Amino acid sequence: MKKLFVLVFAFFFIEHIVLGQEWNFIEPKFRIFNSKSMFFINENIGYVVGYDGMIAKTTNGGTSWTNQMSGTLKNLESVFFTDINNGYIVGSQIALKTTDGGNTWINMQTNGKKVFFTNSNVGFIIGQNEVIKKTTNGGQTWVSNQNVCWGDLKSLIFIDDSIGF
Image: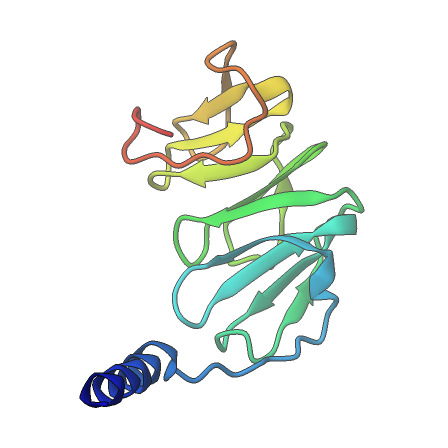
């Protein structure tokens, strides 16, 4: 009986610690089910991108969202910000850059499935046909690395300017 009491007490104690965190459901004012990627710069500022050129921004941790004009109806696949002002979005037929926190977006004349930056200048895109593109000047130009891997790449992350997974 003593073992049963200790087991039940331990279960409720662990459940309280592990599951005791309170989550609040937030109902966004846009169609989040159309989203493909989300990126938060800090606990308050975040972006979500998706189908038909959808970009939305929150400045209060997701409590409310405002739509931003992407200037395209193409599907947007991935979003990444290097700081509060500079961000990148890629899609299968487009790549966009902002330098003013998402108020305006500039077409970078490339495309991709996933984007990641190690700093404000060095970034990587998984392009079509598994080509990995690299920029060293904040997205002004991109260099393609052909045949660096095989298979269907879905994601990438870099720990510095030359080592990535």
